[in-house]
Amino acid sequence: MPLLMLDLDNTLIDRDAAFRDAVTTFLAEHHLPATDVTWVMTVDSGGYTARHDVAVAMNDRFRGRVPPTAVQALLDRGGADHVVLTDAARDALDRVSADGWTCAIVTNGCTVQQEAKILRTGLDRLVQGWVISEKVGFKKPDPKIFHAAADSVGAPLAGAWIIGDSTHADIAGADALGLRSIWVSNGRTWSPDSYRPAGIAEDFATAIDRLISAAR
Image (cartoon, rainbow, N blue to C red; front, side, top):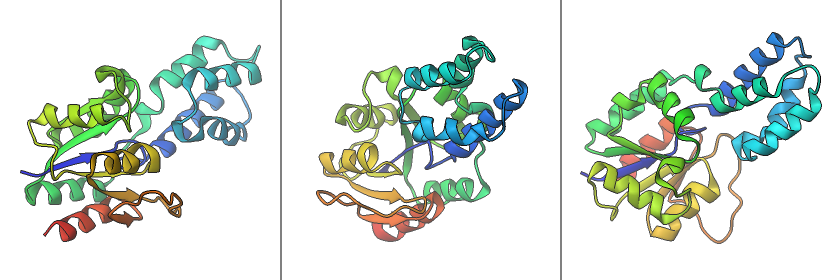
């Protein structure tokens, strides 16, 4: 069975929307201006800013109004309590499994937070396995994490595909391994010149349809 490696945040699930919801709740609980959600989301930069740096920025901005422990609790959960798996994404996973693919999630992040997202959304029942960077000790695009994903489900890496939203972590990672990939654009335009995915899709469900068509 061919291997399909799937990114989690902003590919399978809308991580940014979930984190925005968590931040909105956080601001309301601490009687802070709701408009500060835009500032926090900018500092967070889609989760790519180091958590320590986000904590420092938030503690400085909200000094005297929010205890640092509350800020840390927000960042430790990272919106995991707010993530959802859309019906479209769930149906797409059903389609690709029915087409004979073995699916493994490959995600950067801390183990507790990422596994909470997987379990909350029921993804643990829809894929055959997952690897998380903190747990295995390698981050995308390091080839070792993709090898770990293949090993976790007992599938060969040769012939595998990768679907993800990060040009660097997912698509460059696939390119370095000589694997085909589909980039989930989320409304963005492809910019790197030195490598390209095999396909570009607006969202995860469309990416799955492109994969099934391309692999036949």
